[in-house]
Image (cartoon, rainbow, N blue to C red):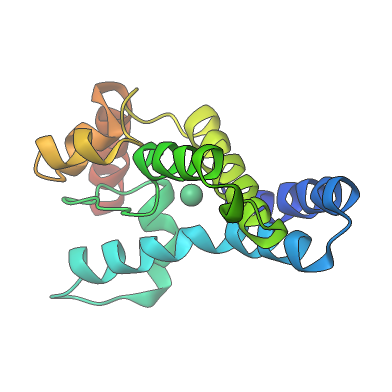
Length: 156
Ligand SMILES: [Zn+2]
């Protein structure tokens, strides 16, 4: 999902977190987590464009182009599951800020999972690892073909 949409949804979800926990720190943590998970794309961009770095292609690279390798380490449901297990088993882990961070994390991941048309298991670290972080498997067959067409059209 596009960063601007993550900002809008994060503002709304953070307001709910504030209403739920009555904690400004928790709401802020939720907002920051909901938006800045996407910073892991920066690693992918630098890795894939390390030979010919073109910053003007930063956003089109994620929307339309084919990245040979996609890591997006933070976009992993495994982290959410481990985190949930910790929240459920350790009462001390249930601090407002930790809950806000968790809600922001899960919301972001769920939205990406719903609205980005990637492979079904794209947001599982083990899936990406199993396929050597190859972009082809992350995108899934349909999206991969669509992106290849875009890249070929751009090349003319
Ligand atoms: Zn994301």
